[in-house]
Image 1 (tube, chains in turn blue, red):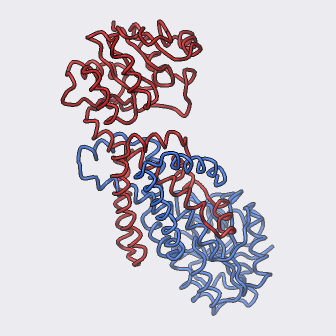
Image 2 (image 1 turned 45 degrees about the vertical axis):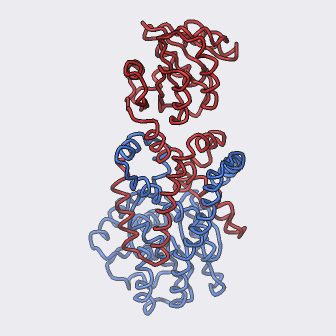
Image 3 (image 1 turned 180 degrees about the vertical axis):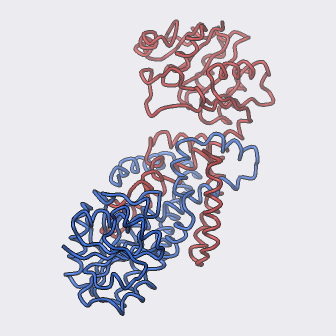
Length: 279
Length: 279
């Protein structure tokens, strides 16, 4: 049995609590809102809950499950109270800036990103088995103690996640390609259609749009705060992906402009073959 | 009762036949393949079927349901045999080049685009009620006789389609925005990801891709011949949409580059509000 600390009892923190408590770990939760503490206790996501951050400071492994912008300030408050053996990890969707700041504050820190979620948020959205068969990326650096990496990886595997290890920078570039770039590509599609200045064409486009447009525009019409955060915290990797995308779009546009239909069909055929590799 | 001619007995031609015959119209079908004629008869999609194009030349309304590249050659063969009262329409997904060529050959021509389909093709994929609640765009020009437009619109309404009328050029620009541009945007996303030269990042991206990437890349990984045809026949409107998209993407990239997070969030918030208008 391990004592687990959870800071932040939303969808991810609450779901971690439900599974880890069911595995007989001793789970202590912290939330800024007393009401969230009560709900976490009622739902069986924690053994104890408190609004006082110091309550988790002696835990063996502490998961920081706050929004990404609060990870560093939370660590700053927490570090002076931590037991020397405590391992701290986080669940943020961008790793390089988080890990860099956190490991400077606490050597026993391991970055993590459980890639699970639903469109809901908050303790009432927490689910058991949320992480089963989902990727859980762990991003140790050269400075990370191996025992800390192993402890977090073992917990992630106990959740039945598929565990991957890579550097924070590799993680950030990979999620830029498959998560953050698609948001910007999709958002630009919606915004471009909406700038059509022929009103009749604009109305007709809205009327005729069907499944192809619906799918391609979905992530670009999603949560604006989340889209902003992705770009803000993963700026460098996103800009690199945007540059690669831009180059590729220029090539496609040039094929259309110069009526190079065979070349366009070849590119689309290669895509058709490559896409299953991402699914 | 009207005599209906169907040239091409695939998914669209066959589905038109099933519904129009059920409404007691006399339906004559033409296919280049005797086997397709047999299947159309067996399935009850036609009253008579033949490989001889002249068999439909006396019909009241003739639907040309061939692939888009065969509409003009088919019309050229058909026109010398047509009865003077015959109305000809087509079902192609691009209208301006088709209508321009067809109305020069036959004054009683009305362009049409029933926007229904499945991922299957051929007479065996034909379905009853395929057009119910789907858009059916009719694209008369200044030269089109009003009676011809009315006759095709009445038939489309009898299929329970939602009938829209606009110019061929307006149709083509609208479908460029909501159908053809998304294919190019989505194809460029897949192709760009696949050009990542850091092999570990590339492999990780493929492993971590989930629903967001799946949806945004779907139409870009679809039928390559269809994607080529869209671009080839709707080149001018697609290039205009690609230019608008390019401008919009430049703006998004500039916001990310210059850390204009509030402006980026505002753009995403506007998208979130606008998207339901397309669904």
